[in-house]
Amino acid sequence: MKSIQENCGVFGIFSQAPCASDIYQGIDLLQHRGQEFCGISTYDVRIHQTTHHGKVINSFTDMDLEHLTGNWGIGHVSLKERQPIRWIANQGELALAFSGNIINSEELFREMMSQGKSFQKAYDVEIISKILLETDDIPTGLTDLSGRVQGAYSLVILAKEGVYAARDAYGFRPLILGRCGNKYAVASESRALENMDMEVVRDVRPGEILLINGNGFTTLGRLESPRRAHCAFEWAYTASIDSVMDGMSVQAARNSIGAALARRDAEEGGLQADLVAPVPMSGVGHAIGYHGFSGMSYQEAFLYNRYADRSYTQSTQVAREKMAKRKLSVLHHSVKDARIVLCDDSIVRGTQILHKVRDLKRAGAREVHVRVACPPLMYPCDFGISTRSYDELMARRYMHQGDIKTLDMLRQLEAWVAERIGADSVKYNSLETFIQALGLPETDLCLKCFNGVRPTDL
Ligand code: SF4
Image (cartoon, rainbow, N blue to C red; front, side, top):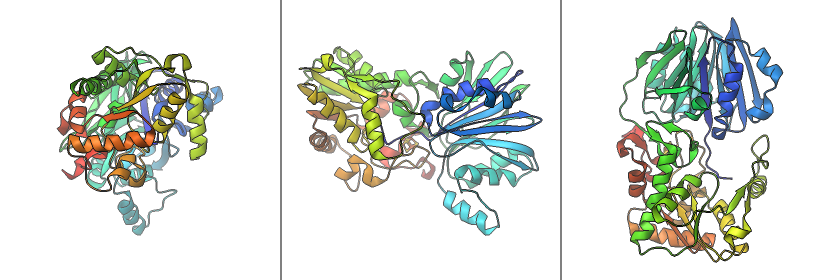
């Protein structure tokens, strides 16, 4: 199991009929963005709310959904905390769910504590709520929020007048609008809309504040947006391959990133191998791209065991490794005596890829050449993806300070990684080729985990 995971997915809907089962379906379709907690709030004279520890499909019962009455509501999946949270204030009864990370939360927390405010757990979502509660109406609160918090957020707020949706001014985390007749929805990914037979209308724009109600979508405000900073990692790993965000299909992006790896192999003299295979599931799009460019045979080297999953994420490293092993078993017939190009989205600590290379070699693979879609991860994320500390990043163990600035430096790192994971060769995309392959302007992207530059500091 990778040690980079998204923290949250959000969903909101305004319908003309009871909406609890729509929200259930919506957050189930966002489950890949967070597997530890899930929750639904609906509005029907007052707010009804249920949250669970576990996955959506294992947690919500028919009785839960029956009690969640009302035609509009919000939902959330998370790796770290129960959401939505609800409160009663001047504005009435409200519930809030958010995806992202507040960088200056410590500072805001101390400031608010000194003003006599109290917190249950000091989660970012509580800090956001307290800022919103200081104003008389939600749109003003959301405008104030952008002036006080630094970081990334896509959020939904449930109120008697409908569902508010907002995205931070940089657009770090995705948020998409959809509709079907007079039913309107907003979701962290387009797949949650399209798989519910809703038409995707557009992305919520960076800095946009929206209200969804019986009148459809109404833009209530647009915060000044210094630049865009869409998380590049969404296209390489986090998002589901059937989603489209900020105008770019995840599948097309992954195919293109994989093709860039094959192009580099071709330019550097070609690689003699028998097949290209993915580390399931996030390596699939990259491996198909590699296959498309190189013409090399595409075959699965691992079987993904869809029944191996448990209702919630394993809490220890040993348990996670056991689960990872149960999830992927080697397809011996494909790999015996084969020279394999193995595509993965990224290398974080290097433990997972080391095990995969070892499994393939034990099964009789003659050679394993690892191709990595993302450039080396050199910095932890500050904007809502739970990356680990510097110490845990494999590339940082090789290079304690500074960045990989030249192809020669990249090649030296690749040789070092190959030796440590037991691969016959390793190649990453350089930052330059990764951005080119992604097909979005560099100035619209956050690349901080690769180059250390916080878009909010530019
Ligand atoms: S630092 Fe990396 S993972 Fe975090 S938002 Fe930026 S690109 Fe995404």
